[in-house]
Length: 161
Image (cartoon, rainbow, N blue to C red; front, side, top):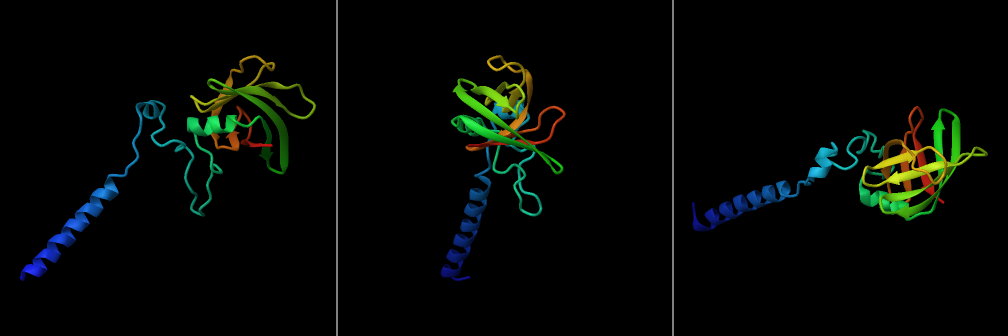
């Protein structure tokens, strides 16, 4: 083998090795907090695309940053679709240290307390406005929306007004 051919063979092998190293060196890291909560990938419990390429969460995830981004908004319209029936409610929120708190009102019914807990990626509902709601369920968040399924209910998606 001539000197030029050996040099090309060595540089090709070196390039392939560097490419393989770069591909494996970009794996996401998990924090101990994510692993403790069972969230190796944020939003992994129902994130990802369907076979048809549709994002099941509408761009929402379980990260605290997305939750706090949603909390920057003060008013939301929420929709829960159950078959051909759609229930609409209005949420008003105020930013606080753990996410945001406020109230949720559906039609002419009395308003109930609402809390978005960004540390736990949950929405909590129940009780009189101004009290701490204790019925909490997992939720997903984006800068303009949040979604949750209340106990015994259907998926409710709230979009900023």
